[in-house]
Image 1 (tube, protein in one colour):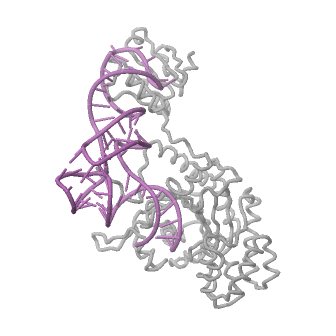
Image 2 (image 1 turned 180 degrees about the horizontal axis):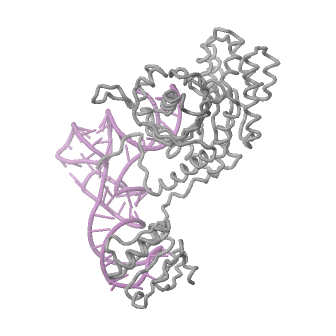
Length: 436
RNA sequence: UCCGGGCUGGGGUAGUGGUAUCCUUCAGCCUUGUGGGGGCUGAGACGCGGGUUCAAUUCCCGCGCCCGGACCCA
C-alpha cells in the first residue's frame, strides 16, 4: 500500500463529478465570451521562470535535469508559457488574443487551506488590448462565472486596485522609493498590524510621516478616486486614476460593477503587474484567503522578446483551491455524487436482449450500466441503488416469456411492464411515467 | 523552514503495558425476480522507525502524513 505524496490529492468519482461541474461551468462561461481553449506542456525550461522571477524561484519548483541534460521543471503557472506562445506566433495571431485553459500546476510549497502542491486553475487571458474594456471583460467573465456557479452576488466581491496609482502616489512622496517593496507592504497591510505596515513602508524608503500620509491617501481614494487628484498633481497619476475609472465604467455597462469595490490596499504580491489588479474575496469571511486574483501585465510579452503587447488575465482555481472551498461554505457546491440514467438488470440468460437495450439507450446519449459480474437479482438492485440509477430496466426470463421487460423508477419504487419490442423504441430517455 | 492540534479496519469510534469494542462500509449467502428493511458468514485497523520492557497500539524519542497558521505566493 502506497501513500500519496504530500500536497497531492486523489479525486474519487463522486468528488470528481462535483468538480467536473465547476470546471464545465467555468469553461462554458469562458467559451461564451469567445475565449478559445489552448493546451500547454507540463514541462518547461526552468530558465523561463528563473529569468522572470529570479533564482529563488527554484526553491518552489518541481525541477530536475532530464536525460538530455536539460534543466526542466513542472510548470508552476501558465503565464510564462502563454507569453512564450504569443511571442512565437505574434505576427500570425489576430488581436485581441483571447485564450483559456484548465490544467494542473505544481509548486513545491507548504500545504495550507486551499493550497496544494498540485493545483488546478482555469487561466483566462486577453493579449493585445490596452483598452479598459479588456480589463472589464476579464472582471465580467469572473463575476459571471461565480454567479453561474450559484454564488449569490452579496457573497463575493472583487477588490480592485491599480498598480500605477500606488506607484505614482509613492513617487509623489519620494522619487527614489522602492516601489516594489512598498507595494509588497501594501499587499500585507490587511494581515499585519499598523505599526508593522508603516515600518515596511519605511523600509521601502518612506518616512513614517509620509507612510501615514500615503496610507491616508489610499483610504481617501477608496472613498473617492477624484480626491486623489485634488491632493496630488501628477499627470501619470491622473492617467492611472482615469484608467481605473474607465475600467469601472465599463464594468457598469457589462453588468458587473456592483461586484467591484475600489480597494487601493489590494496590491497583489507579484512584480509583473502593471495596471488594474484585483482579488476576489468572500464577503462573509468564511474563507480568509483571496479566492483568486488577476490583473494587467503589459510588460511581460516584451520582456519575453515579443513586440510590446498589453495583457490582462485572471486565474480562478478549480478542483482543490479556495474557490471550491467558498462554494462549499456557501452551500452551492455541486452534489458529490455520481449519477446513472439506466441500470439494465439481467435475470437468467437474457444477455442478448439486455445488451440490445443498453446499446440503444447509450446511443441516445444516456449513462447506462448493466451486469458485468454475473450477480444475483438482489445484488444487482443493490448496485443499481449504489450508483444512483434513476431507472432500472429488468430484463428477466419470466417477463421475456411474455415479450415484456419491467421498467422500475428507483426513487418511488413504481414499476410497470412494457413490450420488449417497444423499448426503448424512438424514445431518447424513456421513463416509468411514459408507460404507467 | 517555523508554530499549534491530530493519527485505532474504507469511514466513524471504544479501549488497553499482555494485539482491540461497537456502528457503518464492502463481499457472499438466506433469496435466478426486487435496492434504499432483516438475519447469517466473511473481509478489513493500532502511520513508520528506534528506545524502555518479559511484553508497546498504550510510555519515551525521531520521522512521516493530515488539519490549521506563519513565511512565501509566480
